[in-house]
Length: 218
Image 1 (cartoon, helix red, strand yellow):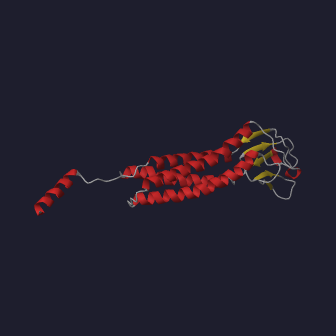
Image 2 (cartoon, helix red, strand yellow; image 1 turned 180 degrees about the vertical axis):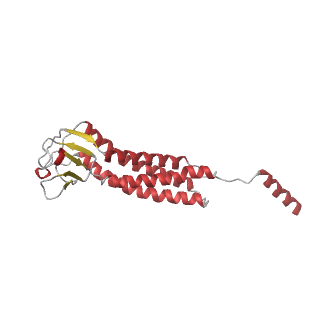
Image 3 (cartoon, rainbow, N blue to C red; image 1 turned 30 degrees about the vertical axis):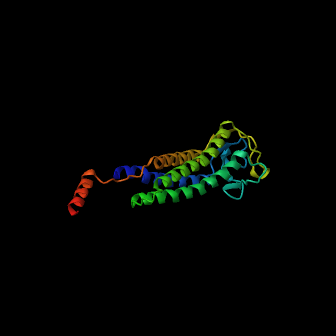
């Protein structure tokens, strides 16, 4: 029973926490999409990194070696997949916080044997919240990956120094991190949902002895 406990709820809590950390960090990663351009006058190497919140590239002729331009949800040029990523990534972070709190409470009750009648329900809630967090993370990840594979354009303003259509696009590490975090959250939710709180029953022989003792006392 101890081995089952260690492999199921505690492992689910650890995986969920690590997956949440990765989900929180993936929105700040700049290289969701690798953007290749022909004109290398300003953009050194002809490579820019398009993230959820900003676009960055290296330059030898501007004031800074690395130039970053912010992407806002209210900007007219922001494509729907990036706008959705900004919203859903924040939702995933908040939902992950709640999932960690509920999962920690459930595992704590299981460790100390607190059978309040709602232990199973708490595990189900934690697993479901981890799955919802994974969904909120996967939607923008797959949407942006589809945009990369379809080589969709972004109408950047002139001060971004980027053309609306790149020579080619590639999937960046940010999308890979998002997929990895979502997989960890899915496995974590599965472990918590499949966990069954053990219920101990008094063996029959002890029950028989107790009954006999009662009769003797009488």
